[in-house]
Image 1 (tube, one colour):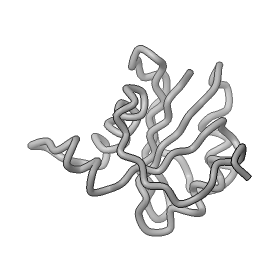
Image 2 (image 1 turned 90 degrees about the vertical axis):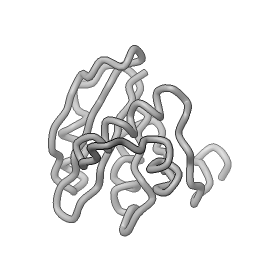
Image 3 (image 1 turned 60 degrees about the vertical axis):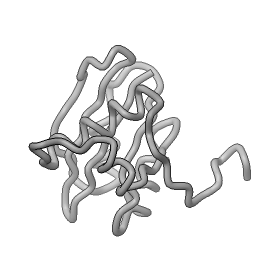
Image 4 (image 1 turned 180 degrees about the vertical axis):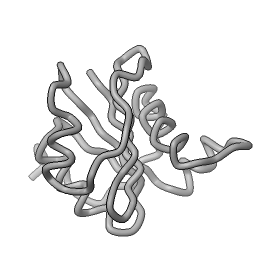
Length: 119
């Protein structure tokens, strides 16, 4: 299993992909498009679960991710901040923190949609 943390911005996103042990297997910027998502996850061996914060315009990125990876989760922004509060808080820390919270099953989720298997 691989875990993808996405920090969604207006035209690009910061992303970290890590394995089950927390080793970063890929990190970088991704263009906010279906092609950008596909390009970032292309070549990753194994299943991928992703997470992004439920902030403005999250629905578009959610849909792009849902097309390319096995599962997408939404993090509750205020609860993530409370858990991951640090002295130095930058966007580059956020997306990696999201991936770690997802990997460790500590993600405070925000539910907006039914999962595919529930439909």
